Picture 1 (cartoon, rainbow, N blue to C red):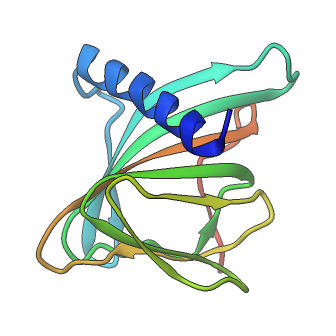
Picture 2 (cartoon, rainbow, N blue to C red):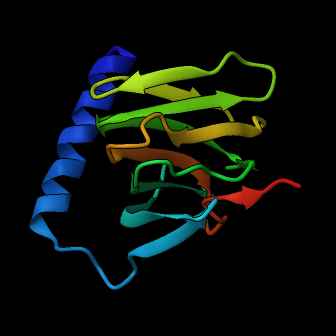
Length: 143
């Protein structure tokens, strides 16, 4: 199965989860450069075939102008843009602008130096799939 097909299947699964459940009390607003991003946990699932590993899926909504702090995930991160446009980049890589239907990958050793809404007028929404150590935080700030 190609990466695009795998991400499409994951998106369909996430869409089903998101419509089957309303935003949980775990929905978080994350302060980012004066603009709050809404982070909604969708699923956390231990992977029995990979002891000590889990998949965590979150939905992130950037308001216009939202900017992430520099951080890392200590995970394999797969990003799928649902609506709007976002800019993503990792240390040593070239920044990219992504629109609905496009994907981005960052590895467990990457420092996420650019993460922001590409628009100052429209919100953006994307889903993040993280393959990480069980219980590890989703995001670790980098100073």
